[in-house]
Image (cartoon, rainbow, N blue to C red):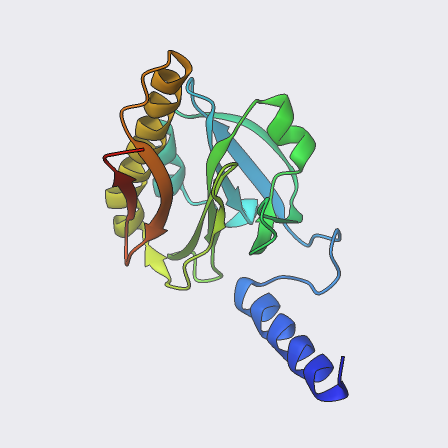
Length: 184
């Protein structure tokens, strides 16, 4: 690797880390997370825990999520190694059998929120846009519906009747839109 590429890679990583508030040393976290889980084994992870404000907490609880665990957030990548952010440790995710979850990073102003979406099949999606609570209130239920739709397809395919092939979803400005083909 040339010296020029080495420095360019380092600069890009440093900028990404500062954008997400990440420490360049993986595994050392300045943040605590809060994990919420619902009966469908979907999760919502919020960090830093100290920035969770009552309106955000009440909204998550209103979606039938329960506050189940908190602890030190760890830097993790999606299973395709395409993105990284702080979230719950993998052991916690396995313990609660969570395969799909949303990561909410509450920024220092405690009003702005960055969002990540984790799906074992599709990886970790991290849009660069900063959202407000009203955006989250409007779009988190839609994201959960996409998760439900995907699980419905998985259940039907287990029975041998796959109605559609579900392809990776894409993030648009404030929502998740699945791309579905009608044939296999």
